[in-house]
Length: 285
Image (cartoon, rainbow, N blue to C red):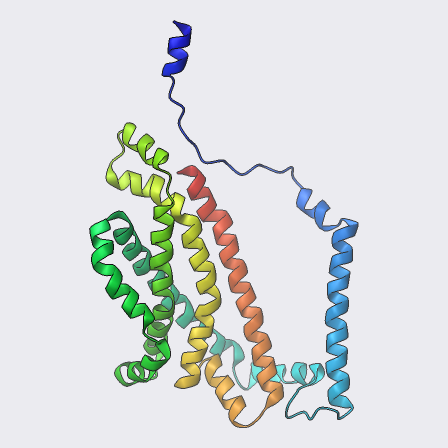
């Protein structure tokens, strides 16, 4: 009898939860001799490269019109901040990138869910979505400029187009990776279709969606900058365009450095969002 009861027990599949590490282990690991040696080596490489660049320009072996020295690059930042309104232009570019990415995320994930859950919808829409994705974005930017002007909406639409298809197909791929056993457990427990989507399908597909978000975090700023370089009245792309027009190499390098730092911070924010929101949602589901 006991054996029969044991055989009747149904084991519910659960996603493995992340192992909790003891407090302070990260700080102790970061201060280990090996990690300190790696950090010191990285800093040494940066110092050596910057010293070589400084020597090349100061010695006259490379003209400053082709390469700006680190001191020249640092020297233009006060002017960029006070006269060129670096942070104000940064906010404009970030606004375009964030709004465009948010719209691409909402509509792209929604389209991906619809196509991923319905084979008929996927078969019908796939040629249209795939064909639209294949259109070179560069070729339609002049048309968007004609339709929308050179304002903020023009840049938001371009960022949206760069990210929408990525979210669509990554969401579809994530949904197709959902384990059938999880769906059977949800149906056995009487979950509705909406509950199955929210509690099972989307949490299981979240790694693919987050991967798309991480890629888009790096490309959204590039798309906004590209659109601003083509046609704009403000933004970092407009500042880049003006620096290129007068061969101001130091300003150009300073802007590239600023954009790189901002891109790294954006990607770090996405990684933090993944740990604090998406992973908790996945394991809670």
